Image 1 (cartoon, rainbow over the protein chains, first blue to last red):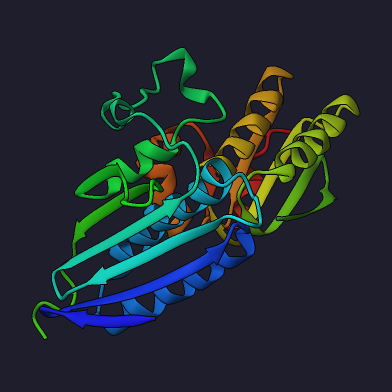
Image 2: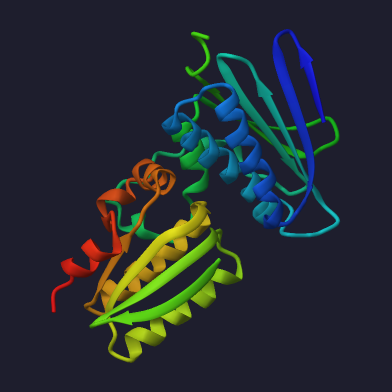
Length: 151
Length: 113
């Protein structure tokens, strides 16, 4: 589904909680990146952060429960990219968004988990979390994009 | 995620394809690594050329494999890293931990005999 408001294109999906559907978002991002002339490094980064957010919602939010859906909304303009992902899980406390970045000198650096939020925060300009009006946990990632601005 | 293994001299090549996303794949991969270590095959090359994408949980799979091989006194290297995987390794600072090569041939040549 798509709509346009004030020069911002909005695309929405309501996905089952299954990793197989990540390909839909990935394919859309590749198409969008080409259409809006993002450079490859920018597209790589946006794809990494977006797939991280959606896969977190499927795995940690909805815990692969087929009856729970993952909402994904992309808001696109010539200069900004925003992805909003919602799930039916407990979410995580906002202070985790402010946790210091793991350092290679830290003995826990090679722990198997805990990098997802850091990846999103490092790549994107802004990462926000909230409960939406229906109580769903929502994470919003925003980044300025340069490609297409001079076309 | 699918994993095929083959031997190239003393090195076991793990050819990974598909999405590296964690879930049950993590246990399967780790068991496979441990099995090779227990058989004395501690020179492991991960070929990521057919990986469509990887997330943070998938990185955890590779880190667990790396740690097991290192702890056993072996070598764990990676080859055929796409731009996207390179980006995620840079962001997470894991690029400074993993030894990576552009091609499998270069990686194989780098293993000590």
